Image 1: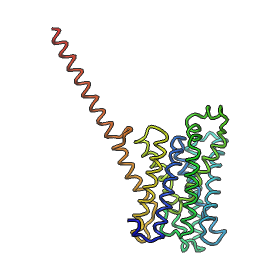
Image 2: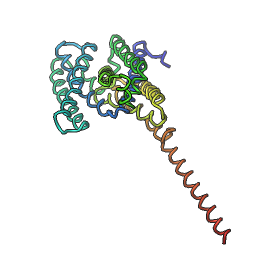
Image 3: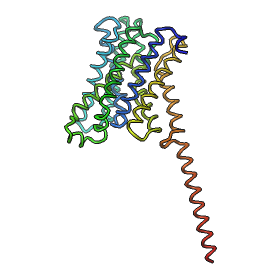
Image 4: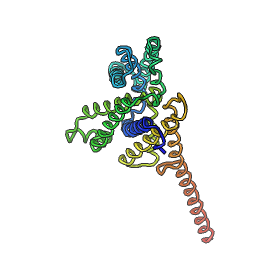
Length: 305
């Protein structure tokens, strides 16, 4: 089927699949770190950096835009930590504040950029994602960076497991929690900024969150959940992109999220770990066992009489 598609479309599909795999792995880390909302905040915080990079450069260069987005997202992350350290505001509240302020700033800058030719360069595609507008150079950059995230996720698997589930043991064996926090923030920001052109700043968080939640319905161990989350993310990225290529100007992000949501619904119903169908069957079996036990006790009492 893929062989019938144009060569550039095949490369775009490959890059979004790699993005989905990377997002699934990082989303699994964010799930266990209980920072799923952080991905939403940082994806919105990346928008001002994209627009400022375009305004400074005067043209659409994906590598420069990614660097701008990364700087902006990192500033957003530091602002979240700063607000928590100097006030009584909780983490989720500070994330919501930074999300709103940075996204509002990004929209304001985008309006200015559109008057300077940003609209003609496809800068609006960073809102909802537009994979079809990616050129071969953009695809290469996105694929290489996504593979870097995947490599870090695989090579440091044991360290991630210790870091997420037993920080005290990590300190005892000399594993620097600060270093792991820095690496985690790096891969989270990198995944977000390489995906905003294909998925968009608004919906990028969904590609990080939904595959991990879907995998949780099937897996009990961290290793299995990580693999399934990567698989679901890859299928969502490639599937959503494939559907969006059949329509002129169709944004990629919504189709990727819809594909991911369909996988989530199937997982929620049929999942082997606390899926709705499994819970229903277990509940019915429990009621049946109680009824059988009650009948046995009743028969025994009648026999004693």
